[in-house]
Image 1 (cartoon, rainbow, N blue to C red):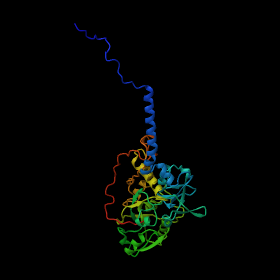
Image 2 (cartoon, rainbow, N blue to C red):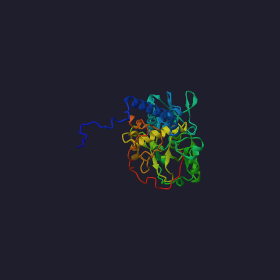
Image 3 (cartoon, rainbow, N blue to C red):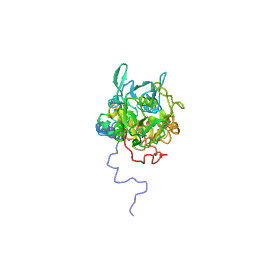
Image 4 (cartoon, one colour):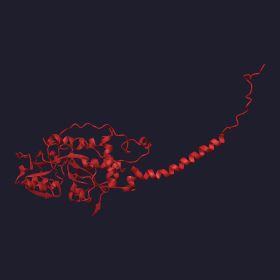
Amino acid sequence: MSQESGPGRADPAGPDPTPARTPRSRQVRLVALAVVLSVLAVALVPIVLGLGPPTREQLLERAGLKGKRELLIGVKDDQPGIAQSLQGGGWRGFDIDVAYLIAGYLGFARSQVVLLPIESEDRARRQAFHNNRFVAVDLVIASYSITEEREKEGAIFSAPYLHTEQSVITLATENGPVSSLEDLRDQRVCTLTTSTSQARLREAGARPIGRNRISECVQELYDGKVDAVTTDAAILAGFVTGGRGDNPFPATLRNAKPLRHWDIGSSPQEKWGVNAANRDLRDLVDLALHASATDPKDRSWETAYDANLRWQQEYNLPQPVAEEQQPEPRKVEVRQWPWERFALPPPGHPGSPPAPPRVSVRVGWWGRARRNSGC
């Protein structure tokens, strides 16, 4: 009778000849793998940084803002509702609020923002008079319409931050109608010297008179020296509103008279943009405008519009003052690590997921064929 192995009997073949891995050898392999990954990371990071878009910090560095204590911004000072220096100090207006909106995104407190009056002819070269000399400002936010001619002159425009159109004002006693520039034939019409309106006025048979400041044109209208004034509707609306609400006139104006706003229906959207000192600073401005437009919690632009422009509409009918939605922003690509997306909330950190697009409450406002006035 043969014998069979029992359930508890040892395997006659003997123990497994393959030696078991020790904990120490496993640790050595893990350490070696970590070293290899670290070396690869050190080698790849410069490649990624060199090939990808810049970070926000790199844009700030390249724009010349790192370590900068003040941000110089050129603005108009004689446009009620847009940008006006107040008696006793201080500033007020839509452009002023936009200036602070952008400055805050760039990391500057309101106390670090220096607002400097700038003349229309100096906006392209960003020159403003300060401390008895002309200085170069970092940004120009001065009801400055985006045109190809100005870009050829050296202006570096951001995406638009406001849409308006060209219009005409006369004394309220003018019976009209003024539905086009042709209705001003043989009349004296004042506009800004640097705008393209002068050429259009000549084409229409009017007699253009150029001035450096729109408030000078309005004063001549009060004094009977001109018959009408033409420029962007958002600018003229503040003069038509006349001191109503919390909208004082420039102190230099005298003998103010009631005015009438006419919709001439012959200009396109006047797209106001920011003229930046360089393209990196332009990109930062666009990042600020994009954050403002896409963050549902950020009401800075809407608050500026309501406080300075919306309430004026009833006094300027039938002329629209300005489009009541922030223009579509330009998206600027910036590099960020995945964890940065959650480190800072918008708008303090560009690149956050955009909010669903807001629906415009005005459709077809610019449906007519219009030409640019270049104010």
